Image (cartoon, rainbow, N blue to C red):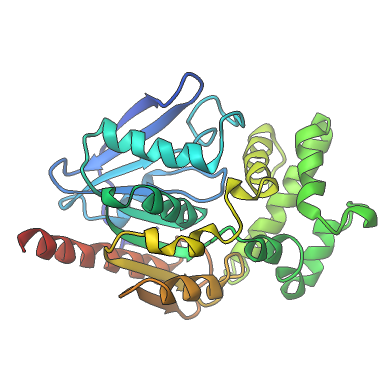
Length: 320
């Protein structure tokens, strides 16, 4: 990670039971008296890492990162029971209550942006601000761009590798085709199709990076990760079609910053534009020569600048 990020700070690690089945892995760092912020990772199925807290000045922020249900170091690993968007939104509220936080800044990218918006609409009084990257709105068009027709036109060779082992009769619904193989296939089938899905995802996400690699080692950890991703995709993220935009008025009247890479082929720039156009006083920043990943230099610079700016905004709002 580039030096523009804040230095690595120590963290407190803990586990929180959110129900009788799921236990979330959480790390807390920064200033306990600072601005509370929660980092929402992408996927679904990904996890947090130690660099994710480096987007926030630890002298001014009280930073909470956690792995969502079934992800990363949360347990049971890969568990799909009681694992829906509604459960994740409620988990966020459970975490907030656990740390006795009145309001916090929502910071998320890709799927994390979607989850952050769902939370902000469900618990608007608990949100002090929103910073989003590469917004995914979980609409049918957003999913089909990635899995059916859209990115397929941009990366035709890689697309053929993605679909070549799926029979023609199943290619009209590739999410269902992969879901069936990953959730009902034998172990060898799961290994094969988890790697195919992950390779396609990686190519689309890293296409603008010269040192990118789109090949994944097929192993059990990858199966669990892709099973969570396809679980959410198959069930259309457990929300109504166009739910976020249809309920845009439910968002709190707080500062909102949206940052999107112009070269992002994973999440549609048009989604962030449409979202920003419907949020009063929203700041949309489109970054040239930048793709989907949080680790890209211009994205790092923009996100750190946004969290630094929010410190001033937050201070101004609390002194009025």
